Length: 411
Image 1 (cartoon, rainbow, N blue to C red):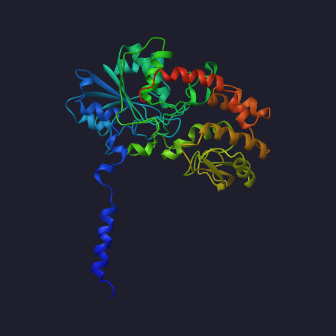
Image 2 (image 1 turned 60 degrees about the vertical axis):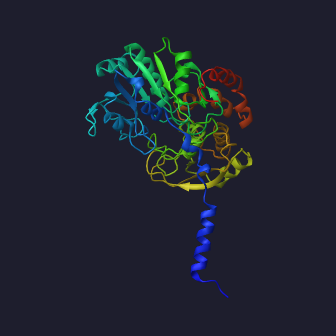
Image 3 (image 1 turned 90 degrees about the horizontal axis):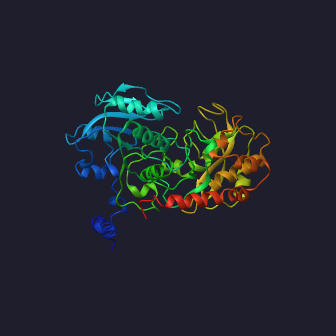
């Protein structure tokens, strides 16, 4: 006898209920609280009787995707009087290399001051003119030395010290984990806004840990610094473990997967190849006119851990090769715990130069500013392979790792 439709549906519903996760199996991200979450939960006690200015951008959000400036402005327990916008602006309306300028925020009426390309005394004068007592920093980083928001942090700390202001950092996750520091360490003679001080290319730290490092090692005079740590974050956690919404920190950082590869493939900004700007997969797509399947084949022969390479063709809508169809590779990370973005970036540079006769460095030697010295460029030009280039920075990296360890907040 065939079971009735009602019996089949009842059995299916029972099976679905029994298979559903229980409350005890709640995902780990429900434990995570950002620095702002903890500050607000404590009633902003750390900011009591202070006029407050916030350095932030669109990533300064709560778990329910409200911006912290909007939340604080509506709360009588905090006296928020100013906002400071970095590259791309406070509300994120500017492209790479741009900012929003001085204006009043339409949503809150708060004055917004432009910090982009300001440092030292000129930035200190901005803090003084704003009338704030305490400068708060809350921006999502992506874990790479050449991502400029950490140097906005450094510049603002230095300027706050010069202006006699307190400085508070609200911590957020490093989206690519805080397990290890990787890559070459910057040499000071190559210091620019894509690297002010000698840290490794992938630093493996949160912004609060970096603030402690900057204060303890690099600032001539330390700023009065307080950090509000996260709770529930582990150094092995990738961004999806946080349960937080991903807001692109900049226009070409659309997903956490972009951040995962960025500290390696951003090196292609220092070459005549496209780093994928103007596509839907920046830093995951790389290529140029004249490149074909041979690059992907050569890259796969390296057997780099956690990643495979696919022959790819794309037409950037802006930046290098705008409107032209180019050939190259797409990275496919299949084991992110094993993946080493910096080694991968070096392997791709080595193989691109080997298989494509048109390969060239940018004439301004931008690659040296990204890697922090001449080492990578000169070794690749001399015919070094991936392992030889990576071996060239290990002694300096070991020294940085020892320094870094003193400032870590999460174990």
